[in-house]
Length: 266
Ligand code: NAP
Image (cartoon, rainbow, N blue to C red):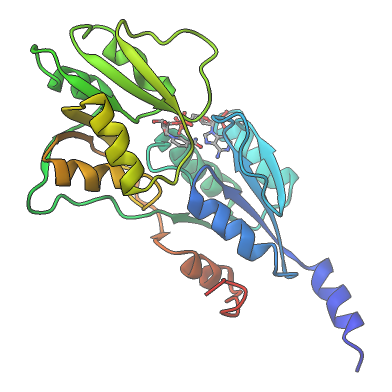
């Protein structure tokens, strides 16, 4: 029997998947499903960075218009599964996905990397949000590394006694809202040598980080440990309970399409 009819029929019945992206894990998932003719997947970006990685699958940029907007998108696009592979701090998007998938009766799975855990020698001060992180810097002047994203810099403006080193993915379109700030424009992943060089050149004596987890931006946490620098670690925001996994392989299993090892690049 020729393989052509089977291929044609599988293309006609491709599983339509929406991947909510913005993470390296979402990009990895896109790479794998792109090679699987049984899956048609769309990767959705929030549009927080100006030049997101171009995936080898269909992609879109920008909000859906709240829970109702996402529900209508799922129905209009005939989406059969949603994979929430957003950043762990994108709690609104994740909550909307839970509600919209329930309303549209579409199965949802979250791909969520585990948070970083403090180990012996770490000097973490854990706080619940950005405002608490800014307050935790204290009254005495500090030299602070901020690797938290441009959306949150204004929270540090009421604390002008500190000198800040700010790392951003894109050059800012407006002046930074901080009186004393240096800026680095760079996109991860970052390695230890580079992080050590950057932090020692600036003479940083404190780091503010979101507990993103994963290894894209974890080198700064390793270097803080090596240099015995305190880290103000912002805990992850609350997201309602949902089914979740930690690896791309588990997502593929859930989709019912275990990729061969070669396709996963292992
Ligand atoms: P959010 O507060 O969860 O989302 C706000 C709105 O942005 C959502 O309601 C949705 O708009 C839209 N949105 C978010 N992710 C989307 C996606 N993948 N596709 C389409 N629309 C999306 O998230 P955020 O404002 O982007 O960021 C919150 C925190 O996460 C910040 O601390 C940020 O630094 C961090 N973060 C986010 C990303 C990212 O890619 N989003 C990446 C790195 C870090 P509608 O309601 O209109 O659908």
